Image (tube, rainbow, N blue to C red; front, top):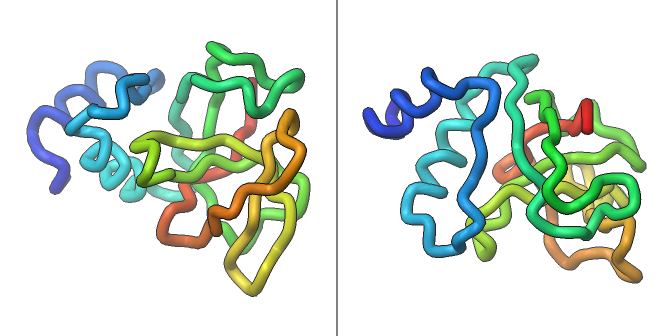
Length: 131
C-alpha cells in the first residue's frame, strides 16, 4: 500500500495482468516492483516476456504467470522471475547454479553463458508456473 494511489488503483483494475512497460525510463517501475514484493506468498501475477532469452521454451511477447514463493524453495532448473534494477524490469531465467545459501546465478535458455547477476531474496519475485 506504500506504492502510492496510482499503483493501488491500477492493481485493483488489472490484478491478473500487471505488466511493466517496455520503456526503460518507466518512472513507476520501482514502485511496481516494491508493490509486487509485498504480495503474499502464493499470490499470482502475470507478466509479458519482452525478450527472447528463454526461447524456444518461452517466446518473446508470451504472457507468463508468476507465483510468489520463497527463494529457499527454488531448485536448480526452475524458471524464476526477479527484478533487474539496471533494466527496470522483471527478468525471467532458469535458476542455473546455487552460489551460496539463498542465492542463485541464472541463465536464459538461449544464452550461451550464465548471467553475472546474483538473484537473492531482495530481488526475487517468484516462480514461473505457466506460460
